[in-house]
Every structure is written in structure tokens, then in C-alpha cells.
Image (cartoon, rainbow, N blue to C red):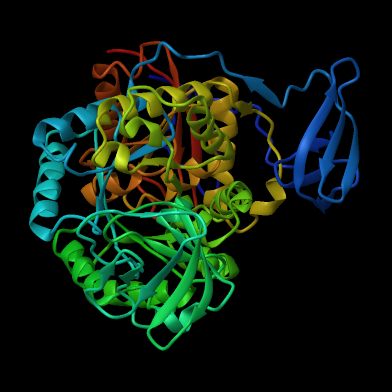
Length: 574
């Protein structure tokens, strides 16, 4: 294998992954003298001045390459770009690529009656499932234990495939009581909710929340099942909330209730949730998805508990309440990742805000290198139909283009009629959308990374890989460098080799990362050669292809701590 180029910095040069024939290639770590467009601001090379603006759209004139950026506070003329500089290029469509491992956006599948068998879990994994979600609102520990055991069995069979396990807590849901048969509500009809248990009449049903009367006010709008039905509060007594039906429908047992613009005063983590969390600790799940997180205190409380249990489990917050939006910056800062849970979010807040909030949550997570999942109603029609609506296809594409790490299926795979077809649709749409995304090939914003060597090298490794159209190989014990590389969204796959099974499974959630388990030897070249052979055996690399190798991150492997390295190597067999 010939090394054709490298970038290194530090007090010493690491010779273990270089050769005497190596030559430095032209990648500059200093600002370019040309004016360059960047993702979150503008760097002027002539004045070396950083301007902060939020870019909304870009117009270019092909003849003069004159660039105008439209931001929230107006348009900025960035001057004339050198036509020889091509900061972006577009990939060719890859609609014929059926390998789910080439898709960069990950797929979360909820496991339920339609998908809980060994056969179906295997088929979902082969179709493209990256994360198996356990919805603790349904089923019991015994049924979820079977799913966990099956996923772990699947993982044990492969070194280059991993399905992460996510335990999704039920949270403090307010629900209506049981009814012997559905009650049809008509527009204008008076209907009541009572905190008395066991009430089921044609005009009154129970709710499971004792403070329901105190939480609602006259004039509030109650939403049933996320807005499938709505009622206006007209009056209340000590134990009864009297309403008038605005939008009617069929009220069944245990329907979810929201108050528009308000969150219930229930604790975010209930007694049942703590039991489920303990179940997750015992089974070493990879992620918790915590429902109805109102503030950062909830996240700190759970993390402190996990620390006392010595449990290495990441905390994903579900942004789905009015309170969570008010406290969004501190919640995102405290968590390990976020889920845009659009169902309840659209029930507690005006629905026209949901697309904007989705974009904002994705942006915040990406800015601080945390994974983000877009969930709810992505292929809702496929609960009962074998093909999606065109709007659903667009919804998936928008989430991918906005930069979500993962997109989620709920009822579609849990109890829908076509779970495999739903995964196939999500895979195909995500893969096609990814092929149309622009590829960054210009080195920019280098001054932002002073003192953060790992981030700088992750950024420049991505630029180099994009420019040369090479995959990236990284070896990691903690996963940190693979996460940084994912943040910069290189156009090719990030092959993340790790000797830790837990890290391998966790990385399954991150966009663009293909985690692979491998024992590391003391000889760097031996480990590197074995990694290439594995990729070649799986037809993921070919002889003559180039790869970008990154040696940086939190824990040095085969290098001095003061040395960081990027190499480009050409694959040779023998």
C-alpha cells in the first residue's frame, strides 16, 4: 500500500503509518486569500474578518460567479469568486444502490407485534434498520426482553453490522379512561372529563391524572390523539372539566390528551419510567429516549443515576412539549442527543411551528456534535397501505437535507401491515436524497479550531476525502473521532474500527458512520492491513482505490499524543 499524501502536526512525526515515499499534498490550514462562503458565517480572506450571520439562501451568477447571501438581516455581497474555485460539487444519483450500509442517514425502527419475531428482526436489520426502539408505553418487560435478546443475538454474528437498542420511556402521559365501546363525539356536543376513576358514560369519561382540573383553564383547547379531535373548556368544578366539542370523532379507550400550549405538571420521569430505566441498565441498552423532558434538571437527574449504576448509556431527550421549547438550549446542552417528537409537539404548539422547530432542533444538535432523530408520522399511511403518500416521501427528504442523523418509524414497523416495505421506502428515499446533497471541497473556518486539534483534523479530513472522493478510515476506542467526522458530513462512508462492542453499537446512530468491530494489535500496520482486507472481502473497497486515514482524537492509538495525522493511501493487494 502506497501512501500518497499526509498532513501532520505536532512535536514529532509518527513513522508507524507513513513511509519514506510520502509527500505532503496541498491542503492549507490557514485562511484562503480568496473570499469564501461558509456554512454559518463569512470569512473574508482580504480583511481576515469574521462576520456572524445566519445564511438562508444563496444566489450565484454562473458568468461572473458573483455571490449574494440572503440572511435574516438582509443580503450580503461577498464579491466575485474565482471561477477556478469550485466550493461545491453534486453527486450523481445512486438509485440503483441497494446496499443499506451505503446509506448515511440511519433508520430507527419501533419493535412491536408486527416485527418482534426473530425472522422479522433479521429482515428489518438486512433491509436497513440501524436502531431497534422499545416503546415502553406498550408491552411488558418480558416481551421487551425477548426483543433485546434477539437483537443481541444478531449483533453477535457480525463484526461489520450493529443494531443499537433504544429504550423509549412512557413519560407522564395524560390519557382518558377505558370505555366499553367507542363514543362518537359530534361538533357542538357537550362532553366532560372527570378525575373520578372508572367513569364511562356517553357524555363523561375519566382521566388518569388527578391534577387535570387544576392544569386546565376555561378557554383552553383540549386535543385528543394529537389533534384528531378537539374540545374547548367551558367551565370546571372540583372534579369535572366541562367542554364543547369543536372537532368530533370516535373516542376510544386510553386516548392521549394534550392542552394546547401547556405541559402537564407531572414529573418527566414517573415511577414506571424508573422501573423501565432500571430494566435498561440491567440489559445494557445503548440509548434512553426520555419522554416529555421539560428542563435540563431531568437530564442531570438521570445521568447522575446512571453514574451511580456505572451504566454507560446515552440520554436522548424527546422534544415534544411547550416547556421543552422554552428550555431548549439548556436541554440540548445537557443531553447526549435529541429526538424531534412531532406528534405531541404539534399538539401542544401550533402545527405551523413544527417544521421550523424541527429545523432549529437539528441545527442546535449539529452545532454541538450531538445526534438528532426526526420522528412521528413519517410514513403513517403505510400502517395500512403498501405505498406512501408523496408528502411523506418529501418529509423524509426534508429531514435528510436538514441534516438529521436518523429518521424513525413508529407504528409503521410496530403494528403496521407493511413494516419491511416501510423500511425499504425510507432507505430508498434517504439514499436518493443523500446523492443530491452538495459536497464541500473548500477548506474554511480554520481559525475557529485553535486549541481543538481533533475538530480541526476531522474537518480537514472531511474536506480531503470529499476532494479526492475517498472513504475515511478511523480507529477509535471511545468513538469521539468518528463522532467528529460525522459532524462534518463527509460525502463518503466513515469506516470506524473499534475494539469496544459498546462503542460499535452506539456509533450505529451517527450519520455516515459504519462501525466495525476489530481487535487492535500493537502493530499499527498489521491492524490497518486487516481492516483493509475486511473491507475488500465485503466488497466495500477495491484495489487501486484511495482511502483517507485519520489519526487523531481523545485517546492516541499508535501515535504520540502531540502528533495528529491525516494520510491518503492507495490500496494494493499483496
